[in-house]
Image 1 (cartoon, rainbow, N blue to C red):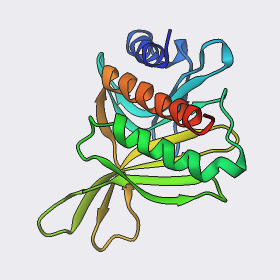
Image 2 (cartoon, rainbow, N blue to C red):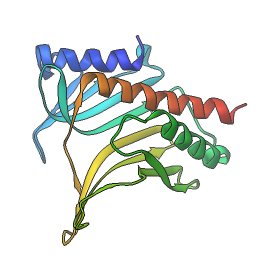
Image 3 (cartoon, rainbow, N blue to C red):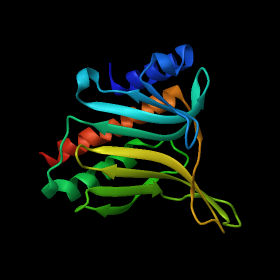
Length: 190
């Protein structure tokens, strides 16, 4: 079973049986919600963790999606090449969000890259901007975190938005993001 199927299956089981019957953590503070895990098959490979606030039979209100691959490692000498290749793969594969992602910054020494919506959703007055943000990290194993944010003029901090996603879309996102992690590793090791 691949990561897409495992993710969808976990979410369907959550909807059917509740969080106490699957690999999920019930959060009560600072916000109510659940962290649902889709662990790697046989403990090695790609896995996902989804922070949701609420769910129904087919969808969830998502705070973030994390994807990792504990079977991959990136040598510090290859950090920049891996981050750039992985960002390119993510941009190429993740085409189903409202705004396309674009590489914003690469910090090879820290093993971090940041991607954001290439053209964020802005209101005409530009007092409110909504965008996707993805953090990519190489250590100890490649992993990434995708979330939706809102910035409002006059507010000090941005806000992590709840975003409605179907289980199928979450499964597809996990699959494409995991494939990006793996393909980047394959490309730099050629």
